[in-house]
Image (tube, rainbow, N blue to C red; front, top):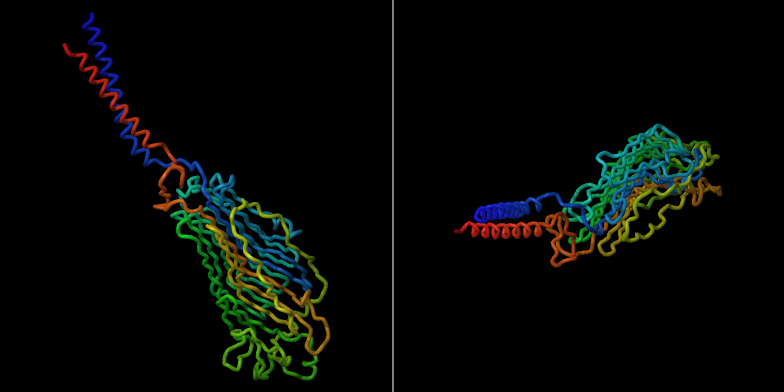
Length: 491
């Protein structure tokens, strides 16, 4: 009985030892697999954040138009933001109009993450009128995505994209965009933990004052701001390239910030020139430049044209005006027919982006109304600010002002509001800001390599070292039990 019991005990001991050895080997082999497995979400979010916006059209002031008035109204607005240290990590918002009393056109289209969205939220816009604005349709698109690993820089890819497009908008018969306009704002977390925000404007061109002035957009503007923990920040602004032309207007090219052109549409307050037989520009065989006066439609003495210089002689006779001298006569000065719109709609629901530096206000640039009717077109510049590992930039791509001042031979007060401004508007108001964590180590393949505990990115996923140590311990225990079992077989 004793010998049989000894054999039975040795057999049990052997089975236990074999099981322990098997578990130990399994633990050791499983450690590399655990390292390869997809990591768990971040245990701690880092200071990754970005925001971008594009206002396709912003009417600062429309005053004196018989079609209506507008103040601080935005058309085709797209905004998006990502914030790693927030409950809402990503959001994209779009709307057609930022204005009061514009009905459903002011309702924003919102998409947020988490959870991540595979497809964007979309909305189509039917043909509508709102005050002095006429819209031939449009479309909104808001897309927000989020991978939890982005919170600590362990995943890269697009985060938000907001697009607002309007088809063939017109403003009080003074401005028409036959090819439509679209504003886009995006945020992206790139490889190496670089956060990028961009705002862009897409348009083909526009017509001013009933087509008397035509602006062709040869290259649309784009603004990109990026920030990295290791490489620092940068701002890349691509100004638009415009070709300005029209009836009797020699084409002018604007391609650098600060470039501008002033076009005189004629002096509507001097009909006596027609009564005395003064020839109009369309009937003058020598053309509108026969008098030798310098304007946007006449070559300068140096062989260039007025578009190359902001200095324009506005004292020439009335025959330098365009073929349609009374073009604006029915559009300004009368009582508004379609009411008034003003900005100040509800703020767009976006997560607050902390740490973005403030950008100073842009100086007033609306020209003072000169005698007669003038169209002033200029390109704005980019402004930026940096604070630590945060950067912000803003650019107003294209500025257009229509002014109508009193005649130089009369004492009438002209038309329009303050300084005779009929229309003051901007195309492509772009914003971009990016915030990255403060440096705590270097990035290698998108993951921070930091020495010491408690710094840099958090350790995520299963503890591979503990799995391996447990396997070794089980293997050692199993071998010891097997040895004890073998000793029990000795006579």
